[in-house]
Length: 225
Image (cartoon, rainbow, N blue to C red; front, side, top):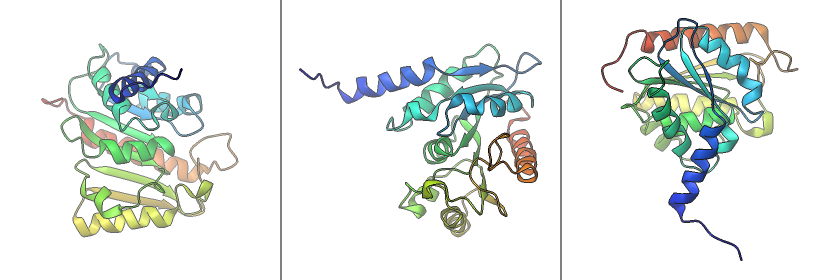
């Protein structure tokens, strides 16, 4: 007999799974503002260097596996934010969100409206093909968003530059706080060293912009989580 879980229990089980595999990378100073990193389809292990790099900027980083949160309607990200804000290594205040590919699509779609808990969103080559109502997506954005994308990204047609440009155009029309930066000739996973698609110049610029954006919105403790 197949047992069908109620929706609430089903979502709770997904959340528990995602948090059980979350990795924390505290800053060298011992404490820092919290940043949630949502991996791409390659999994959390492929994005450990990215998480450690952000921790090296002085943040308390929590790395999630995006595949664990497919279909959970943002519940895993919400739970991760709540957990991060309670960490003994996290300074009080809103968190930063950084997402890649699949994780970038999740972070963009779910957390950009959460201005009560999220200070800034950075997404690299985010999954955008699932967003059919682009004006609707943009209309929900309440948090500053930095989108970094390669103009040669054709990976599974998930993250094409044409869609990123359409999102940026809608953001301009609606005066939404979203900035798109394009990298000429860059494909998917352009920041992952060792991959054939790694592009050193684009990666260096993307990381510099990420560091600057996080510093801009997380440099001072916030009085409201």
